[in-house]
Length: 68
Image 1 (tube, rainbow, N blue to C red):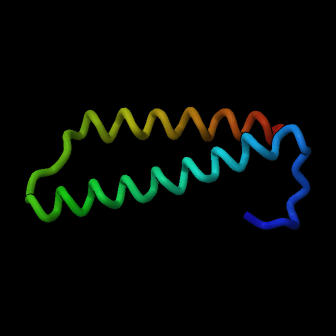
Image 2: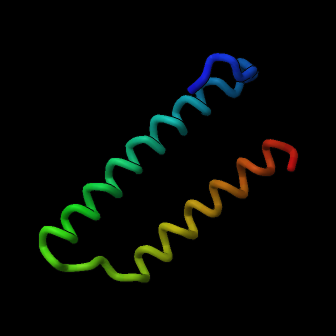
């Protein structure tokens, strides 16, 4: 994350935690994709839809926090 972004001190720890969590989520998703490809077994589309809804909720909260 760029140090040029002005983030209030109160927000810094939670933003850093979210950033770290998102990086982990990206790695987990890549592992799931690799496993599905290796095994030739796709994950259920309902699971993908559930994760997509979770991420949309995150985007909605962050958009609200950005004042948009």
